[in-house]
Length: 356
Image (tube, rainbow, N blue to C red):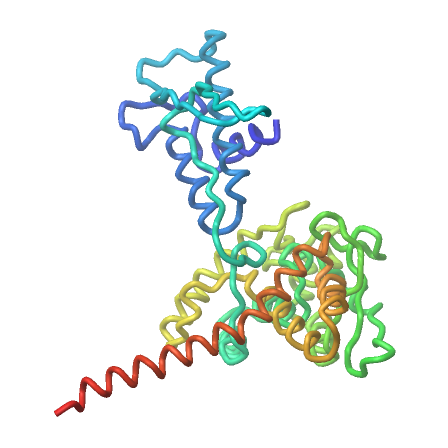
């Protein structure tokens, strides 16, 4: 049912009917859904196994609909294929089973290499500063502060959009790190702030950023937006110009932020910031986590470094935090190899160039 719900949401988003099977193959709803799933997989938003299961469930639904006479179409929905699978049984004899699949099935091909959250990579410190400066001068005040929160606290967009003013007012200074404050987020916090998987915990926030957000919360710009908001949304830090939340309830996505990010990327390319062409908001979280992992590994052992990253980013399990530790530990080796290969290539190239 979860798979069918995902398919139903896609149909609604694409404004398609589930029985749309015109003569032109590219216009059929199942073909469009297959392309959408592959794009989501390649972008790192869905796991390959999840994509395969979603497509398999959609096809199973249509098989059931056809068998019960609920769908009457003249065009073929897919082409069935027989696949022979060989395997060895428990006593070592080779066996063969026949499976029926379709030309619409999506193979479960796992990506090779280390992939961080959502398949995105961090940006360098120099690129981070350039992106923030661009947002400060060329984007809305809200997007600039949202990006600053992502880069310097590691919060997800869903949590940033659900941040309350009282959350900031309740911030307390970390007793062992002067200038670093802690705010409570999650369903167990008071007031509650939405988090992925409903994890409750503390997030670090630098004092200059906290002071800037509190000043913005009391600004005339935000007061005008608050006046248009409903009673349950008045105390959100970030409101659209119409007084609405940036994210809908229980959502990690924001149409308003996504729209502004498109303009932000275009302005970044015009300004000569190369990383802006493919920059996504979630990369701010990846950048914070990578820098934190680098600092943690330089001051403590890997076990404590994993725990520090997990607590700071409110990861549900340590496996996600471990990815950042592995990424940081592999980076120096990759950089050393790149430098060595560059020197070797330049040596060969120069020898060829100046050979008499």
